[in-house]
Length: 194
Image (cartoon, rainbow, N blue to C red; front, top):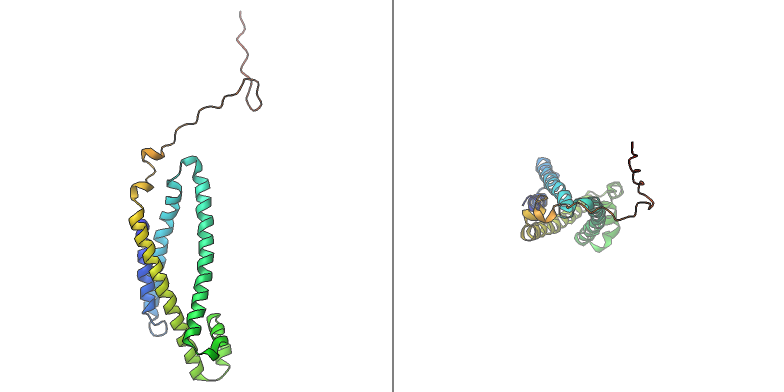
């Protein structure tokens, strides 16, 4: 259940960011960012546990490594997608002549826009960037909500319980080797008589 709460909280936070003007309402933005951090924090701890709790104990290191590899790869792809979506939606808001300006604004180079001296151009650039972020927030909120629904419907808490009988670790039988085989100590000598 807690695994689904994290993405749901993140979806609410992203929705709040969509309707928050970062210039006029910084406290609203900070509250939405704090809520997003709580949602992400709720999910990450539970996901780590979920990754290792569904495999036998002797394979938990492998499961943890696989989870972390996939998490980092997913974050990398996600950041690239968000950057592309931000640039595309910012360019759509600006006119076709302002493609280079959209690149500068998205990359944080507002000085090049201010250097033109036109206040109206700077206002258009900021509005284009706000539009771009609004589109990103809506898309990410939908993705987070879909993830929360998928986790809620497909993952049961009992599947993640390590103490269930299905995941109990049975001791492995001792390997069969002959007394003189490499890697084994030779048997002790027989006791001597009186």
